[in-house]
Image 1 (cartoon, one colour):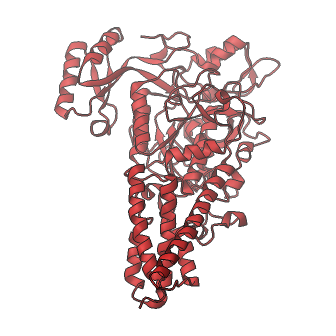
Image 2 (cartoon, one colour):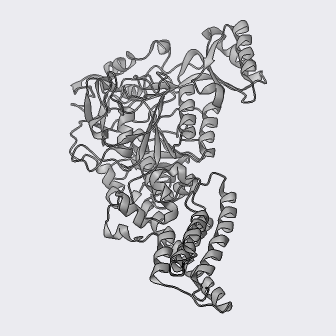
Image 3 (cartoon, rainbow, N blue to C red):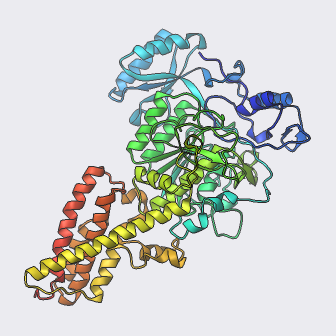
Length: 623
């Protein structure tokens, strides 16, 4: 077994640097390989760091105070730079093909030979991922893992590593609150939407979404929709926050906005799915994090935010990330606060790893860096509402925190805005965010650059409008020639134009230029084509393209084709739908439940049907 890391990265920095950081009591958490990624900037009292309420302490005293709060399992660990593990606890990924009886036999075999006490990682494990957790005498752990590695019934078995939170709040009344939202262009981005219909899973310490027992809903989350979720620590359906980190992260994504109180969130119309995988102490196991990632993917999240990480890869964690990606989820993760290489899960292929920047658009001193960094976002002095006193007695503050944990939710929120505007394929969302980022020289620091949500949403919107408009003109010319070739006459009336715009671009595609509030349902429907109206209900529903196909056109044909005066409306609608579907096929930036190849094939068939109905309906000479 690798030795456990007893001191947090912050405590180690205090010891090594002589004190350039500040700690806070509610940030005291177990430390090591998997952290919630946040840190602190230089706050000094007469050259010495202050602990908690600003009382000057020595670096050694600060480190001792931090170490004193670690759980008992870590009591024998030593300072180091390796992963943190729970002695005597393992994660076992059993092959999916095994039956319940075969899994029971496997557990019995290892109970007999090693005294292993094993159980399902959660109530979902036996039916979804066959992930077990086991306890064994620490002296027999290495032998157990060696036997499991050779067992053909087991895909992988690993020591139980820990994910953890280590944020440090500053003055909650910091003078430049929420400078970070302005820096990413929030106000301009809101001209294009507010994340309606998109679900973002916050895989963290929970979120203050619940009024039950000792917990209460955050006052500035009162208008935020919390959807589903699960507590993998307490094993119940209410993922309440007893730490504060998760609520702060969720606030950046979807804090209730324009309510006359508190702060704002970037995608304030989005749904938050609270998934608690980290304890009150801010740490959680490998199994809990992996289960949380899978849960979000299985329950309708389009984006998952992971403001946590660790230094070493894990096969179990990597497979959970790939599972989510295969289900069409954009996984966004903090790069880490080590000041060195990117941690995991941020370093996995396809994960959008986020580094942290300050007010001057420089890389924050604590931010991890490397070729895996995809994009940067503000992560210094980020202000949001969060809980205090363990979430009890309605204790809440507007905390100012630092870390890549705080940078990551800016990107997750911006992704929700882009998805709500019709770019729903995760690879296309990432490409849009990266293409519009403010470029910086060092790619290992900033990746594609610093997040610019305003440009990302504008690019997504206007690219769609341009291609749909061009497709509409081209298809109009094609239908006109076909009708004339058959001796007919094009019936292009105002009704036809109304139908074409409704289906192709929306009646008010230029609504962002007028600064109309697209967050209002009426404006959304007017500024988006009929085929995208399902987005307002759910981006998950939109994966099936229930309105973006030939079926609505065929349904309209049964109602209107028999009436000569309404045929132009039908024809225009069919032509506009064809233009929308052409754009879907050309860009393939829509997440389709059958995949990109099937999307293009499906679009071709539906475009042909729409054009056929458009030609029949727009021929003015047809009786």
